[in-house]
Length: 359
Ligand code: ACO
Image (cartoon, rainbow, N blue to C red; front, side):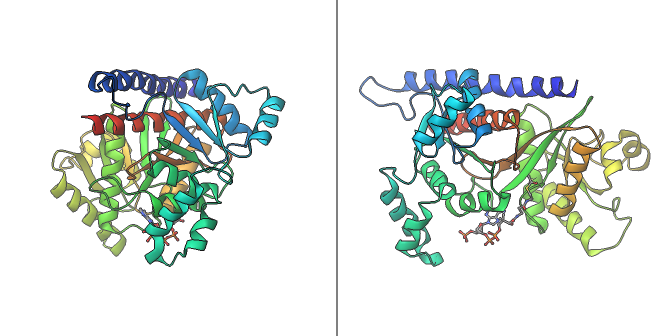
């Protein structure tokens, strides 16, 4: 039953990716004279640095079949072809890219050197970095050679995300990337952040995490009701960790008076409308929150995993927010479904970026 619900939500995202893809092509065609080359012709290219992984390969075939985009699988082409044969995966509609022999490698090394020379990187080191797929993929994304990257299937999360943080600019007005999960329960859907990136955020960062999560909820056509969580309810405990959350709430109230957001509050207050209305009628949150902001990564990461393992939630993510281009780091050993879901989310984001640039 839970799987059915998750599929329904992701079906909507996938359909959105397809619809946007068609819209974008029409938009580009209508704005382009016959002599001009469209900015991004054809399906969206989604790079997978771990292209020679079995699950990635199976997911790539599904991505083509669903019409979400064109996967670009990194790896040695003879090895990928042999594995595809063994798995009976059809490689039609999929591009293969070997970063070791790719013709743009020296160019990318020079560009990486120019970007990182004042961060202690020498040209020789830049060339070595470009032998690493997790550096090569965000460089291709930066240059617009691909429109999205999905990685992390076989690497530790920090090792997959660090290259993107070093290479890709942040989105306008954002100073920290952060990560969230969408959790689907039988009768409700909640967003949890930050579950993957910022270990001990300060008040400014916490406020930004909340804004990014609220914007993501909007993207899924969900009106955000945001709660900043703590072990205290509206000043019931005096402690510096509570002060930090209160400071973040103040920033949010000042910066986004339109947003339904409040705190600090305990998790049961945030998710139980009766407690909110009976004990805290002054709260700006009148209904249970659907965006939960944790005070640090320890609580966020532990909470979402417990909700999945013991609370019966179906998790979609992690969704990385705050970067100017779609770059997502999977949880290690993500399932084929999870990979396809993240690719669909990346495709929707890529289309939004493309449309905003064309506007
Ligand atoms: N947003 C934007 N840029 C950032 C951020 C951020 N939140 N954090 C770091 N950076 C940038 C830095 O500015 C720096 O850029 P520069 O080299 O151009 O100056 C670069 O990233 C490296 O930053 P460092 O300060 O050296 O930090 P480090 O590389 O050690 O760590 C990282 C960054 C990897 C995000 C770290 O904070 C981390 O490990 N976070 C936790 C990840 C994790 O383990 N998550 C839980 C598991 S995931 C799961 O369960 C699905």
